[in-house]
Length: 93
Image (cartoon, rainbow, N blue to C red; front, top):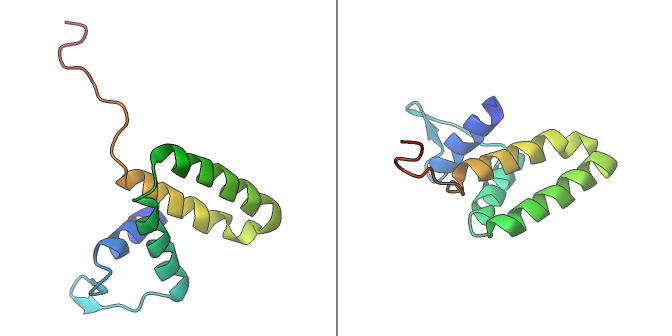
């Protein structure tokens, strides 16, 4: 869960790269992850879920070293998506 929070934080201050008042160098792979999260913001939820399933299945088989990074990307993208289920006010009363 730390990776998601870190990735979301870096995505929110991407332009300045600042964190806690100091300049921080973001590695290239994290920049690519952040860019991918931002691209997923424009993708519809159904397409995003289908893409997630295909990419994670492929990573698990062919590139297991990327599975953790891709999981973090999709978790960060899901946290940025609006909730699909809304609670009805006064239900059960």
